[in-house]
Length: 233
Image 1 (cartoon, helix red, strand yellow):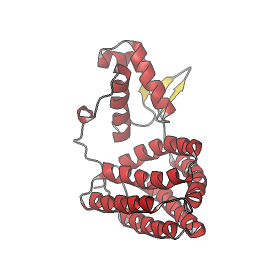
Image 2 (image 1 turned 30 degrees about the horizontal axis):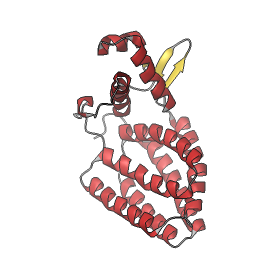
Image 3 (image 1 turned 90 degrees about the horizontal axis):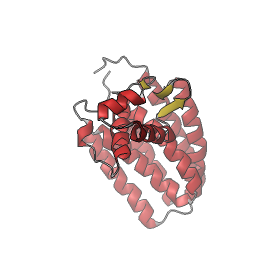
Image 4 (image 1 turned 120 degrees about the vertical axis):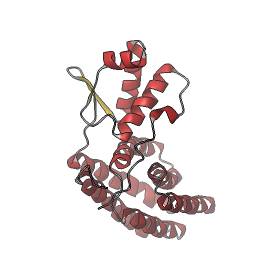
């Protein structure tokens, strides 16, 4: 069974650098975690990283603290920093929160989205279809998040969006690593289309029902993809 997977030849050197040393370290580490080059459970020793980058401990520590804030790294007094483990139960927990919180915002957005917002959602859908045709995994993940973010923003609840953004970093990292199972992206596109029509009609109940089914499908697809053998092509 084939999966859409990220291109293993894309390295971190192509990433845009931040304006500070710790931001550059953060961007490199984040890219390596998302790509799976730093696997879940791996220890990230400050001394080793400082030596690798030719830096003092301070910018490395700041980079790891930022990654902890994004949920990609766990820091503990006894073990230091480790890449967060993401097993099936962890995914269920994340998506349970996402279904409740994002579902609430989707229902709230039904009466708040403007014609320009609806047009933006349809434009994102067109880009998603192009990314799917070209099997551009990173763009699919980015555009999927942009679609939901556009809906969430219309609800006007910045605190809820902040929490969802934190979870989206984790989900995006995992999705980039495991890919989509066959047929899933087509289902995503169809469900997005249905959601847009319900939102355009101001039908909060229908939009919320479609959303909840959509999120449960995403959860199950990720869990199933995580169970696929690593050598599947």
